Length: 253
Image (cartoon, rainbow, N blue to C red; front, side, top):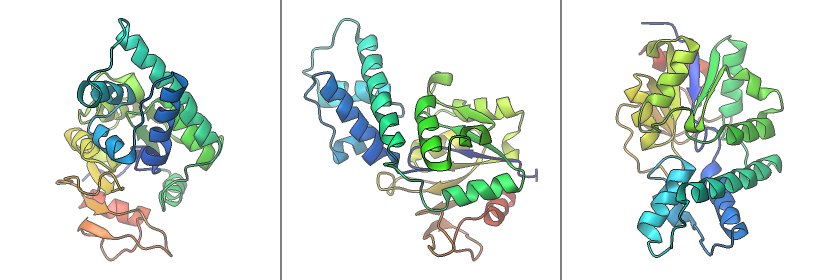
């Protein structure tokens, strides 16, 4: 078995609970700014999470939930403009410190850095969103901790396609068996498994009922020494929180 060399993290829902109180709120602010009467409540946004990518969610909303909207001639530009405004509002929310990292995330990242492991991001969210989250939670220098930021439209096919993970591994000159992925959703694990990466899942409110077949471990959160995780599937080897020792055991299993 290859030695573990790199940890590859999804962002939204994995590093932080950004969907409900971050992206959803930012979308609604962008809609209001554009003079649109659209309002994505928590339930609707959960349905829209069936697809990955913000522009894709706008298109799904209009195709399935708001079919009477008269699409402008330059529709793709219209969608891109709305998404750019949403990104601006999202980064403002991040700068205000509205969204913290999930339990155990900062600790595990620091453990990996101390051990000399390589770090990467593999996400469908925009690079600006990644930077905003990392800088607002881990500090201004934290973006440099990650060797590769695979984000947004850097590959044409988004999750559940494996392309974003394949691209990150190629940039790092790593084989899949040298890394492990951290995800929170069905589309996420379909992507990481298709890239042949072992995968650890931490669910969130939107993904609790997803099918995580093939995961090395499914948890409600990474946990802390004083805040035990709940094991939903897999073997935690007697641990009560996800540390680097457990990650290595799961990788080598």
